[in-house]
Image (cartoon, rainbow over all chains, first blue to last red; front, side, top):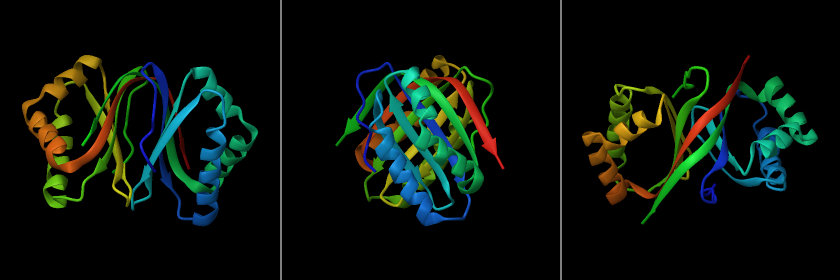
Length: 109
Length: 109
């Protein structure tokens, strides 16, 4: 995972915090990668960043140019299948937060 | 780390994405814990969630009731010392994004 490259604000961030179950590690990983590839082809997609720790807590933040782009992605058919599988098998729990980025600043050595 | 408990939107999220250097793991961990404790005592602090993967990429999201609370926390003296140490030693790079959460939804098994 690398840092998300995003334009000057405003843009939108979907903060997805999740706790994984312990089942189907391999299929989960494949699907997660597929969803990143698929999301990146959607209109309005800017970037994504993600980290998961050893306790199975993960945070994925995807960045979008508009609320409408986020809505379209949520409705995408393949994504909906993954969402169903997520609720059925992969996630113990999750919270999705939709937010508008108003300001950002960065530091590089 | 557990899930952040947050009230009904709107509220604010500070998305801090960072890449660690490889130095001073122990002092970094102590300071990171101290900053969570200190932040949680600030007025307007709601909650925090955090994950760091094995490649040293971490995402910490702190939640706040107002932009002013975020501003006050940024200016906190002990936090400023930690920020200085972060730029000097601990982080290869980071991006901070300040966003307003407009909507959220959750799932629990």
